[in-house]
Length: 263
Image 1 (cartoon, rainbow, N blue to C red):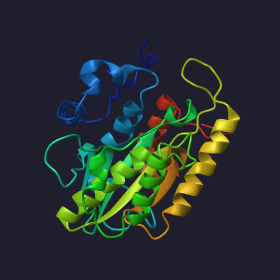
Image 2: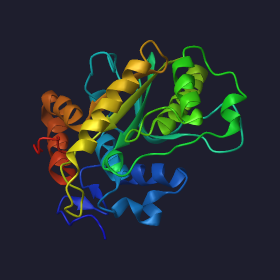
Image 3: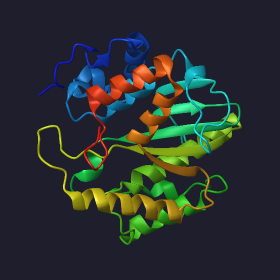
């Protein structure tokens, strides 16, 4: 099953986007969701992220300011960005997008339907306990420890993945001399792509778990921010002009709706 036809899409990409650059980014990443065909699945979270952030690959200075998150001029926007751990071999985190200013590296983990499916059960390899992680990451390490001990309490939020991404982001930002920020970006759909309703209790539990995770990470580094796609698209729309047109296209084609059903 592929994403529903829309005259604005070309192989899963909005027709005003730099398609060659987006395809090249996916070709560099493990799994290459475009080549595998996963990108065209109507459930694809990667498609939403690539279409949303792909607009800014060749025009990073057009990325709107987000108070407390992206305050200075944006120097680069990337999609499918690797954040390397302090070791060479093995797997390293790949975030959906990265936004770089003169002072901050924002890593973006984007979710669409994933949080509202059956509970998450992430795990960590032993190597996560054999390295000295950057200062400020102790809060993430505490969640990591709770996951291993089976007492984290999270079911809808994939905290294991977020902790791995945070530790990779902290290491990468340290190499670049930048402050790391982790942005958890999520949609709140009322139904899955096949029409099945998203259970309201899963939406509610996910929100509670996001708030709980944020509370646990108060004072941590990377700084943790959570935001809905609806909020981000509203910020883009407020900029006006071509950026607003882009936000409208993403909203209409991918419909990352709020929990109350508004698109």
